[in-house]
Amino acid sequence: MADSAQAQKYSLSFTSIGARRLETAEVARAFADCRDWAEVRRRIVEDDIISLNKESTRKRVGSEIVKRLRTLDDKEVAFLADAVGDDQLAMTWVAICRAYPVLRAFSTDVVAARYAGMVPDVPRTAWPAFVEDEAADHPELERLTEKSRKQLETRAFGMLRECRLIDGDYNITPLYPSARFVALVRETAPQDLAVFPKAGALL
Picture 1 (cartoon, rainbow, N blue to C red):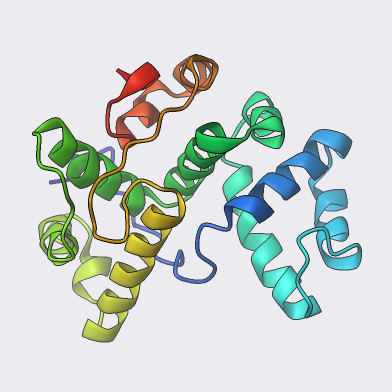
Picture 2: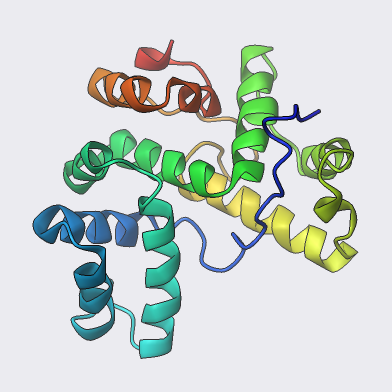
């Protein structure tokens, strides 16, 4: 159940593009280079730094990636620009969870909590149960059509797989980011570390 601090209306527009971790890292590199979001948007659309054919697609995907990256501070963006492996995946997931608190709640209260309780997987049935619980404080979830609920479920699990927090069989696969990642996020927003199953430097 969400508390009063979490009861702000959930944005549910995360179904549009997926995690796009490689494109996210490329946009982070562009910002680290120029430190100007307007210039970054221009490079996305005019220079096609995220390698998408249609201008309309570049605008749509680029706008969503910029929205997510702007939840990070400049040091975190710079970290992501140079990150590889689990560091890249983890910082991408932090940005997604900051942009979409509904995913933060699911990642914290379901994925990480199940792992902490020694439950190895996250079945698809976990999403409707989560939505039903959250709907008491978030009526925007209650108003969703069944089709929209399924779309959100599909995208949520798809993004978890893209960021390698679960595998194709819905088993939880914890990330092992570096101690530097952990220190940086702890300095900025330590509560964000709760979105990850606790393993390695995250312990």
